[in-house]
Picture 1 (cartoon, rainbow, N blue to C red):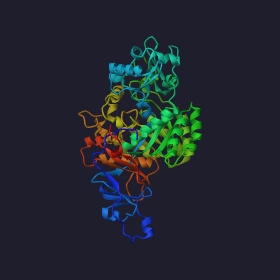
Picture 2 (picture 1 turned 30 degrees about the horizontal axis):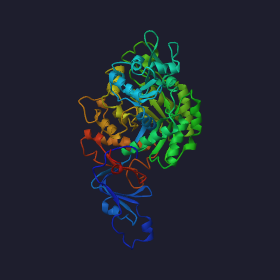
Picture 3 (picture 1 turned 60 degrees about the vertical axis):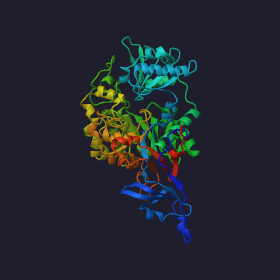
Picture 4 (picture 1 turned 45 degrees about the vertical axis):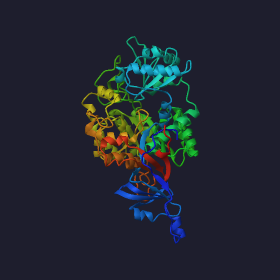
Length: 579
């Protein structure tokens, strides 16, 4: 393990306990459990049980300790829980592990810092870098900076080196003059399709770039991460996610760090080496203008492994509803973007034409590929649902749960459509407490629209399948317990006097379902994962508290003692060295 976490305070031992009667016949020995978990509380779909038995990675019995003990054989390992709680493994249906690991090693800026603090952090990164070396990193927030930044603030602390910093959303970047010059961006450079180069009153680029097409104009001139670097970054992130109890996840935008092919190969190499423990879905980034994406999709099965499924396509339909106004909205934004009068500043940007989008989703659905959309604004959500509906009309019901991701805003008329067409809403609970990025969203859309931000309560009431995605490393932590708590409170983790979208809060039981059974349904593994019942795969976690028994404002601080996938212990807090 490469992460460093405190050793667990609760001692849990896995040991061979007691002799097995000699009269046990050969068949009984062959049917004996590999592992028995006992002495605590096991959460099943029917309630709580005392013990659980696992054989060949499958739960073969769950119930009272005496009944489960009948499955013990001479080689059975017994885990004495000493009163601890066992829960199903958690799922993250929208996360960026490779980006998370790379970001950790770059110029890291804590979210919410003011301009002086950001300049100080960048100056420290410059001091550690070699002459002329690119300074890449993030994340900045316009409200915390006091407004949209300018390249001059970076020029002051990094006059001789190119600097490019992502904002919290990942949909805007801030470059200094050296970085703009490296990209050849001048007053005369036009906006790329689907992107915006922000300009001052004189028409000069300010250094702020909106959306991937504009950011890439600069980023492609920076040296790419090496194969060794991206592999190390991914391994670090995988270990961190195991420490939080994440046993399944979807890499939501494969290709953004090192290209789709290199990233698929890295995942496959870790799987072949036995270092990829989680069950992983790769969503391959696609756009109509990117022929490399089509080749990656054609090559996907070269990288398929038992626990690695590159069978998802990611499409970006819009940006984000922050100060840049790039999320596609059905109604105009409430505030204005300084120096801009374009249509995008009024209602955002729909990045893919509806006819092109519907045709692509219909094609991928026919190929057996799930589609995941980035859709933050309600106009983008509607476009995604329209495309799924077109695929259903053309192909019939394929069984694929195409999912509309983020769903910051959803028009009430579109809520019942998801269930009717077999689509899912994937939401971002880690963003649901008050924070700088949510301050920016509130200012952009106004006080009325913000009341229905991330309308999870309404989604569930409409009968839709809803799943959670952290969107880490856009958010500071991949810890799912923060998301579980804030789904219920819509407050800052630990509680706060103010909230964000409080009317859309849900119950703890519903929140836990999002991270377990709902996500398993999205992954088409509902018969295997998401529950601790006989016949299901033994993906489970041992935690230091029962989330159903503690105050909800303490759930974010839950510590995972052990993580098991297919009955294999893949994380043990007690085995992690102390700092």
